[in-house]
Length: 275
Ligand code: ACM
Image (spheres, rainbow, N blue to C red):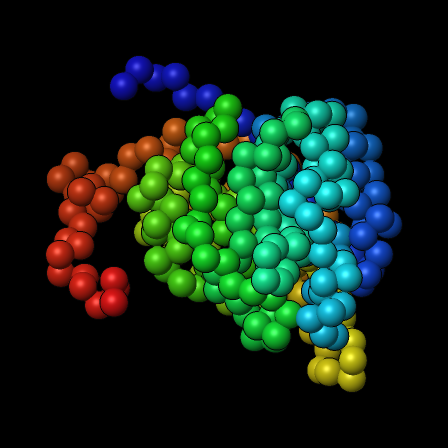
C-alpha cells in the first residue's frame, strides 16, 4: 500500500453536566469547543448522556428528557459539525418505538451517519432504557471507518472485537464511567484489536432519589493501537483533549513478521462465543 497516511485531529470533551438541564449543558459544551483559537477538528467525541445527566429516577423521567433522533441534540451536533468540520459523536436518550434507548449519534454536517442504541445496559439503566437490538455500527467517514460503542459495552470484549473485525480503525466511546478500571482496561482493548479508542467520560457526582451517590471518574482518553496513552484527562475536572492521530496505523494487525493476530484467529474453535 502506498504511504498515504493522513493525520487527523481528535477532540474529546470531558464535561460535568447539571442533571436535567440539556440546554445549559449543550451551551457549555459548545463553549468548550468553539472558544478555542482554532476549533477545527476531524472527530469530536462527547460523553454518554452528555446533556441530560445520568442518574434518572424513573423511566418516565428518562422519557421526559428523551428526544427523537433528529431532535434538538441532533441539531446541536449538526451545527457543531458545521462549525468545526468534524464528525461529532455524542450520547443522548433517544425516543424509540417501545421506550427510550441510551443512544449515540454520529453526525457530519446535516448527515446522520449513525444512530446506535447501547446493547449492554449497566445496572439501574436497565430500569430506564430499552436494550439496543442492532449490531454495533461502523460508518464511513472522511478519515476512514469509525466504530461506535457506549460506556459499559467496553467490558464485553466481543463489542470492540466486532467493530474491529468490521473494519473500524477508530472507535468513539461516549461514556459515563463509574467503575475504576475502565481507563486501564481500554488500553488492552485497543491493543488486542489494534484500533484507536477515543473515550469521552464525564466528571462530578449525582445523588438523586435518595440513592447512593455516583461519582464519575473522568480520565477521558485517546489510546493508540499499540496501547500508548496519547492523551488522558484528570479524574475530577472538565477538560478538552486535542491530539493528532493517524487512523491508518490501525490497518495492520501484525505484531511480528509471521504473526497477524486477525489472520491467526481460530473462530471455529471459539464456538462458546456464538452461543
Ligand atoms: C455505564 O455504562 N455508564 C457505566
